[in-house]
Length: 198
Image 1: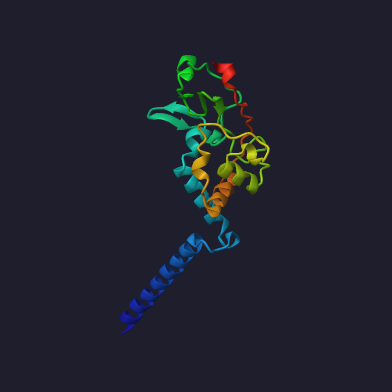
Image 2: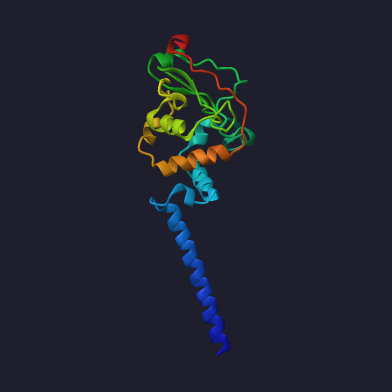
């Protein structure tokens, strides 16, 4: 009888833990759950996941060449095109023919639009440190530079049109994660017009 009680107790505890875990996961993924009801750690983890699968590091993180190709420089993660790096010369003939060309670590791109440089997404003032979540939303969903109504449009290769229908909770998670990473002081260069490269 004592063994049966122990097995029953263990089964009850296991059921309780699984039930609580399922409820927490359901709450975090429930679109009716208010953002403030979700623990900040959960929001940051979701934001980190989204930044990873959306490929933000591909362009916004400086890289060095490693044994298997380009590797993110950890202390510069998501800090954009390094301000102290000289701008390389692009093949103007290819650009005149409509080709797009990337800098070797993908933090800059040239094409018929000119040369664009990946921005600093860290919480430093040279990045998104003084941005509001509303600005971040406008930048991602409407393609407005710095999320400002009177700002220019974001340039290629930033795929902002892919984010036009992003859910607000996903956008909030990305913004919260970006605000939680180490700040890197790096003022990225302004874009160059086509006239300066062609």
